[in-house]
Image (tube, rainbow, N blue to C red; front, side, top):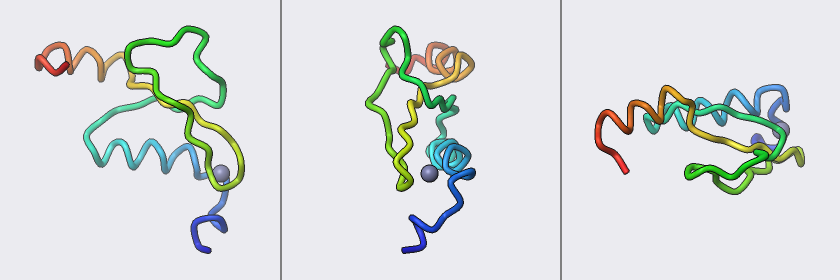
Length: 70
Ligand SMILES: [Zn+2]
């Protein structure tokens, strides 16, 4: 299983990279957001058992607002 053998230190960066490929700039955190915002999603648990919480960055949200994306 290449995916589980992947170095855990790269998990956060690869999540960010995958979202960047979809054109979304995100921040990755290992702690649940204190307040659930409009863009808060369920945590993503990597193959090593760490849960990551991803949220769009302020710059990303500003870009959506500018472009009229809901
Ligand atoms: Zn991992």
